[in-house]
Structures are given as C-alpha cells and as structure tokens.
Length: 240
Image 1 (cartoon, rainbow, N blue to C red):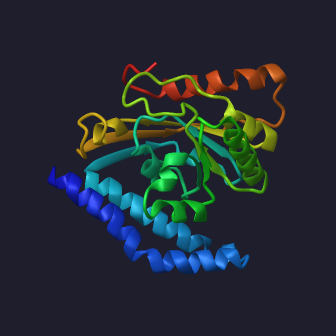
Image 2 (tube, rainbow, N blue to C red):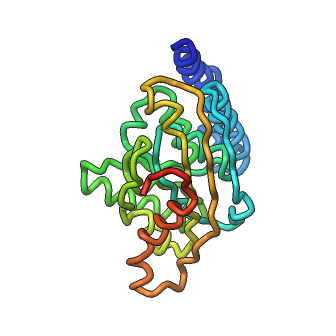
Image 3 (cartoon, rainbow, N blue to C red):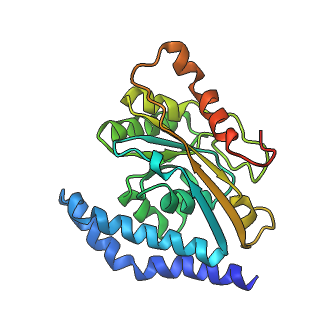
C-alpha cells in the first residue's frame, strides 16, 4: 500500500512542479514554434513516465528497437494495463502521440501534456465524436506525426487479447505509412492483478514495420488479424 501511495503522490507532484514548463511550451506551440520546444516536451514526458515505472518496481525487457522506423508510422500495441502508456512513452523510441480514451482528459494535469504530445481523445460511446477523432488522427499522421494506438479499445487485464478494431489500420492505410506491431506482456502485474501498485516484469517486443502503401483491398481487410497474430507470436503466456 505504501508503494501505491508514493506512486500516486509522485504522479501528481511531478505534473505540478512541471506546470511552468508546460505553460512555456504551450505558449511556444500557440505561436507556431513547436520545433523549439518539442525536445523539451518529449524529455519531460519521458522522465515522468520512466519514473512511474521505476516507482512501481517494474523491470522492463525490450527487444526489437532496431525495428523503430525513422519515418512516420502508426504503432499498434495490445492493451493489458494502464501501465501500457508509460511503457510506450519510454520503451518504443521517443514519446509520441497517443489515441487515448476520453476519460484520460479528465485526469488533473494529464490533459495539457497530452495536448502538447498531440494526442487524440476518442469517445467510443459517441459515434460522431469517434469519427471526428479518427479524421483528426489521420490528418496528424499525414502531417508527419507518428502515433501509438491500442486497437482493442479496452484493457485485457492479463486475459486474452481482444479483437482489434479497424480504426488504427484505416489511419495507417489512409496516410500510407507503415504499421509497427508492439507486443506488451506483463503490465497487468503492476496494477490490475492486485488492484494496487506492485512490482512486476514486463516484456516488450517491437516487430518489423508492415508497409501499407501498396496493399490490395483484401490485404487491408486482413490487416487487423495479421497484426494481432504478429503481436500474439511474441507472447509467452496464454493470451490468444
């Protein structure tokens, strides 16, 4: 329980201390000077997420970092835990935009930094809003902003990997950018398994990018299951 209390204290205190940096970066972005502060944004977010993992007692094993492309891409990962977010912010290259559930926008201190990362908030209970969010995400990716998406739409909490929804794949194929499958295994041990913060080991596998520019219609339809199968192939447990 003490670990959980310390973790949540750090979660909010770091954001409070970093508030002046957020104000400065937000001012620069609004003036069209994002390039000047993008390294600062990424550094602050990376340090925050990395320390959240350390305070939780997470040990992380990563393979496949050589597969992270230099060009714009859509990273597609399975979703076991809320800890998947700090994992993808720290273990899969530089912090990048996320397709995030709308409820995260209501967490104090989070919304502003996610806006600076150019995250897109999605409310699946509102069909019109969901369509707008997918359109906004597609525009971002076409403009050269890489994005991470969890196409299950909800956490599996260590259970079987759920069916992948098609939004992530429509974004990638519309923008004609590669999809990078990412396998995350073990994050549910850090929180969901016991309902409190607890140490655990996490395995992350970054797979080779899948080009989308020249796929046939049939290949596009098969993408969700193809990527899901690739992610499952790196899992050691029974998650299929």
